[in-house]
Amino acid sequence: MTDTGPASSGATGTESQEEQAPRYKSPTEQFLEKFPIFGPLFNAVSTAGQASSGSGEFRFSPEEVKALRDEFESEVDEIDTVLTDFDTMSINLQPLADDPASRSHLMATEDHFKVAYAAIMQQREFAADFVAALSAALDRKQQEDDAAAADFAKHTKEVST
Image 1 (cartoon, rainbow, N blue to C red):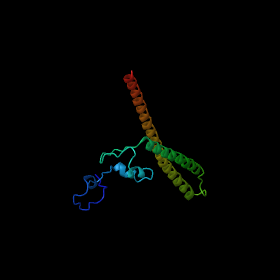
Image 2: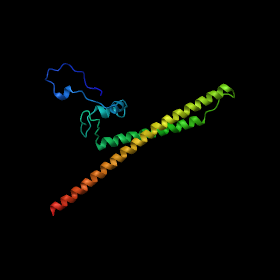
Image 3: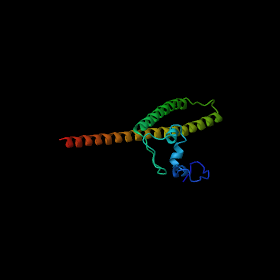
Image 4: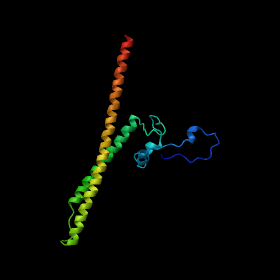
């Protein structure tokens, strides 16, 4: 468990229990809050309410999830642009001369491009999968809301008749 709360100042009992208790942050939360996209979400109080301390649970409003999904969709588009540029650069590789050193350098460069391309693709797949997961969560939430509204309308109609 990681104590991320403020250091104790030797409270005299006038502070509330909540102020004295350190706030636990899960390893996932600690990792994600380092990214510019996620950081503000962990440092600000969610409009949907604060998750219970130490639960490792995050609560976001549908609007926050939509905003996060939109940010990741933008990231996927930017990564696609990088991949397009990357493909162009890797195709245009040529040895500087027809000698063993130039050929060796070209082979090392091609190996580097393969490793870098795989890393970029991994980032793209993560971002795209995250967009899909957020979209699925929003769809599920909408279905639940629609079902609840239909159920409410049905019961309202039964009561009024």
